[in-house]
Amino acid sequence: MDTIAGIQQVLGPNWQSFFLFITQLGSDYAYIAVLTLYYWLVDPRMGRALGVFFGLSVTVNEALKPLLDLKRPYEVNPGIASEAARLTAGPLNEHHPGFPSGHAQVTATLWLTMAWQQRRRWLWIVATVLVLLVSFSRLYLGVHYPIDVLAGLGIGVLLAWLAWRSGLLTVTAALAWGAVVVALVVGSLLPEWARGLAIGSAFLVSRPTFDPPRSWPARIGVAAVGLIAVVAVFLGSSLLLPEEIKRSGWGSFLRYFVLVLLATEGVPRLMRLPASRRAGYASAG
Image (cartoon, rainbow, N blue to C red):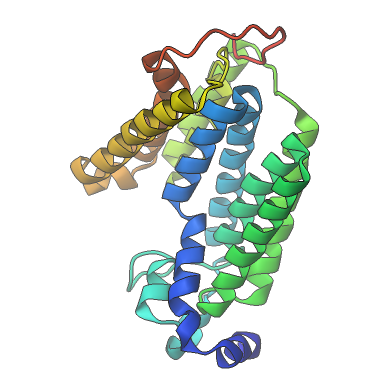
């Protein structure tokens, strides 16, 4: 608590708007944008592996939090975090376990996996800066203890390294769809695991058999149409589905599973992306 109070005292309240923006780089909308754009425009094979380990990271985080059930700083000292800051942890007046930090963990998994996969210096710099900024924002906003953030970073770095070492994750269709069935059963029994399991298993069965567009007009078109379609389904399902379905394990699983399949299978077909001319594509078939 002293560390958080010290950070807030040194920086003052004027930085709150900035760090509220930075912390949103670890939100669902940011993840949707980065994952889909990487898959469509950079490398669908590596994007598939990234998506699988991203889903695994979400699952691990959502499994550990309720298991350990550790309080957040503002639950001990309500004055340490504003209402806007607390909203970044979840709905107000609900308990949201804080260990490990999901923002730190999943941001590290996402960006460091891409940096390892692409092996470009500029991307390593961008990834490192973003991960550190998002992690620091959780401390400044008073929604995590330092140990929460450090644990999240550690797990995220480990999973990013494992994603890089695992390569393209070539599996058979039978194994991939068998994993989907197991994930659906587990997610239905353990609703807090459902979202991560759905994301990971949907990427696992995806078939990245297209080449990303090369021209900038084509890239902009795919990005615009694809993001509009995916965000529309994400928002539409949030607004139209009954709360009890969204909170149920099977409902949450199917919602995110369909969303990922729309991104990985629907958008490439909608935009008529060319079939890959490269041999050795990792696929589930």
